[in-house]
Length: 279
Image 1 (cartoon, helix red, strand yellow):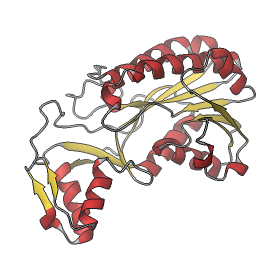
Image 2 (cartoon, helix red, strand yellow):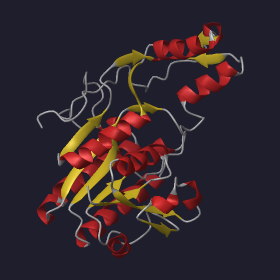
Image 3 (cartoon, one colour):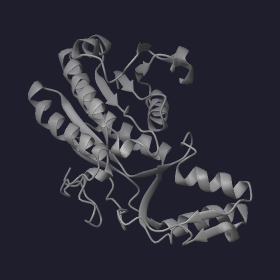
Image 4 (tube, one colour):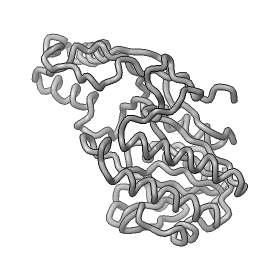
């Protein structure tokens, strides 16, 4: 695999990507925010660690230095504060910083860059979502991700840099923020507390974050270029998901479907076709 620079190595997805890269024998350099080094797993086993006060505020020249000697860049970092990230102006900072990262990596001689996007870049009314679905982001977060994809897919190949973009669907698993749906369900059910939910008719495509990391690393190794859907392809309703988790605790009686109003802006059906269509 050679040498890989990874961003986001202390995050929900990036932590799993780091594990998978190292499991496959990659020499990994991580770029992290100052003060977050203690969250890295087995730091001594890494190729190296570079730190910065602001991952998305560095110029291209800083990234050229950080990427020196790296064959591949896997960019998993982005602002992702639950309840805030979808509409945050920080998405513009992440977009600008991502473009500078790519510029610096290309200048340093990196041969491949793999970024992490979102299913919400798509026009989500398409069922199921393939990588050929049109883009129609509806939030600043999705818009910034789509802008990064479009800019990098047009600008990197002429520089001789191979580029892939892994669009994540719905994830759960180890290290998930406790404010998200699955950990909220588990914590309340374990405590014997009722859980207020919508009717639960929304259809979603869920995947364990560890499986998603394997798909991201598979993509990194494959040489595939362009968009790749990181998803299970298996539809499940929110109701069925909640009932399955509640069954583990024997507390289906605590699920209060319909206690919360449906969000009129919440897409009713988001399921993807895994991988890259036409590859």
